[in-house]
Structures are given as structure tokens and as C-alpha cells.
Length: 257
Picture (cartoon, rainbow, N blue to C red):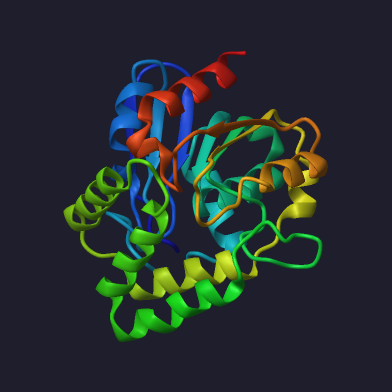
């Protein structure tokens, strides 16, 4: 029996589930959550082995995780996933289509690595290097990943400061959870599932994101023509930190349409 995940519930209004990215935890949403909580009941999930959620072997196997989220979250909700959290959200919407009213993918893609007919992604070797380096020095590896997320952004210093602060306010993520998360980023290709999603979809991306080229938005639209998109000028991979108000506007506008 898997331990329950830590899910912080705040705010008032319709249910909105928020899934964080690799190596982080739900407190990373900070300013964005504060704004959204005025209009939505937020379900801020700590993925297994991150933040205040315990780790158990196989807890980040995609099928296991999706079923666990289904057991612990509202029957129907809006969903918002950042980066790895977006990939997981696509899988959830595919497995439980009746439970996702609308899906917002923030700096996320159905396939994070370059594969055939999908050049608009990272070379898999980048993630594999992170996986190799984790065993040597987890703290340094996480700091490098954090710098990669902030690189290019007009507000890179503020982004680095806030992400570093968030990494230190909770106990460090469990090493096995980090490796399992990287495995998802390297191995999971959800383009087929993404193309068949029926719920309204929106992608929000920074035009200076170093992990996801902005050309990905056009490729994603070809997969699912119903997709709405927004490109935030000057933003990197964590736009909700430096541009929380702009992100909130894009999210609320889409949900309230």
C-alpha cells in the first residue's frame, strides 16, 4: 500500500490541481498560487519523494502514479502542470479524460527529448548527464539544473534566487525519486496520447526557455489542432516565478473562457 501524497489545499472556488516539475515541490508555486487561490481551490501536490511526500519504490512509475493521483484528487478539476508535472498531467488526462475539465501545460511538452519527427526538444544526453552526475553530487547537480532553467530569462537572477530558496526550505528530494523523474523525462513520449486529448488545452511557454524551443508550440498544434498557446516574452523555463502575474492572467483567461 503506497503512502498518501502530501497535497496542500488552499483558496476558494473551482478545483485546480497543480503539479510541480523535476526536483522541486509544491511550494515552488509561491506567488502564482497566492494569486490563483483568490479564485480557485488549489490542490498543490508534492510528487512522491519530493517536498513532504514520502518515497516508496516504483512510486513514480507512470501507471502507478496516475492511479495514485486519481485516488487522492477531486473527481473533476482543472489541471496545471509545469515541466515534468505537465508530462504527468497529459498522462492523467489520457487515463482519466472525464476528470480533467481543462489542462494548462506550463513550460511542458509531450516529449522532452529529440526523437524521430520531433526535433524541437533537448538532446537526451543532457538528461542522461544529470542522471550520471546525481550519484556523484546531488546538490551540485540540482544547482546546475536550476541554472539551466533560469538561463536566458530576462529575470534569471530572480529566478535562480527563488528556485534556490525553494530547494532549501524542504528536505532534499530522495535520490531514487530524482532518478525516476529523469527516467520519465528521457523515456516517455506522449505525443500520441496528447493528439487524442479531448479536453480544452493550453500551452504557456517562455520564448527564452532553454529546455523547450518555442518552435515546439507549432509542432504541438499539428498534433492537436484544438491547442491554445501563449508565448511569454523574456521568460525562461520557470515563467511563473519572474512573471507570475502574466502567467496568472493566461491561466485564468483560458479557464474562464
